[in-house]
Image (cartoon, rainbow, N blue to C red; front, side):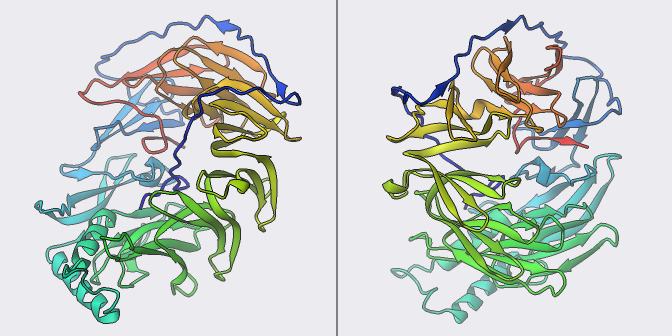
Length: 511
């Protein structure tokens, strides 16, 4: 089961045929005013690299294919710090670096040892550790897997068969249960989540029971406590925004030949510390928190995407159904207490379109005929949001176009940009799009303010204060100051098969 940012993986299908726009459509004709972008001064092999200047925020990167190394930079390239994990240490940043590193920027999670599976030799024990990014000190928290773990899993198999003998019976004489349990355990034992105050780390571990359970490490008292002890292996963990609840998923091993493994979502209230099971399904998705006690979730399939978006009150278990058909993307508009959602190609054709859905489940259809659309919450003076992607016969012709939607639902066409090349600054004041040759920068009113001649951009990351951005060409990093157009070289990735990708998985800002 795959989960992401909001733990959503969305496939995009770009149309290829341009269509005639409706006469009522408002069209912006853009005549770019190109800026003669200054060439950056590149010094690929500065030795030694200057130390951090002490002026935050700091850019943190984990280059692709360089897992044991974390790089920390001044945003303007004036300094760098390299953090090497201890010997045998490795980090697992599935879910993003902002999950790997504590919110206060002090601690980084890493493991030593591995459970290999698939006939490969294990490297035991598997220990959970944290490294202080300020002074380089490390702390071992606990061994989450030790010698004898396989005997525990065998015991788990027997207990499950005794509990539900018909469900776990062999298929065509094949005992599928051990393989299913082994696979779940090996892929998900490296699961963890920091609390919002950075004082607690929740994690999965096979310490006291036969399956992996949820534990919490308290940094102040340096104690470990188990808070969940079902027979099912933990899959994923998250904290509520106020730090008062934990939400986790676990697996109910299913027939691997039919793909019927079930997953359940449960919540732990630290006042009574008794887990409450919320929903279950074959493929589950957990999305944004709507409040400290309400979280989005959905059912899904292995081939047809997600469906049945719902809001769950984790304190009462009450479910509010928001959308019962297939959908491909959505964005939460907290100011208006609504969700902008579009149907997927697997939805009922009469439901194709974009909808505004209130947190209470009230729906308003905004446009007909769209599916597989990426949505961006613009929140500007003119456009509330942007869309791009593929379309069906309807009110808007996408065919790869980026389209802004005004408060009155009037579309404005910006041009053809890949959805990965559209970015909105953190304060919503800037809209940026780029192609193979240029960056196009629009202000809050979505008027084109500048065009930078910068080719071959691989990815970008905005500064937290929206004053500029770091961009990667794959092997090199630069800082672009959008106020004066200056470009500063930051670093070059010199190792073989190494590259900088500025994404949620591989980069973040430290406070």
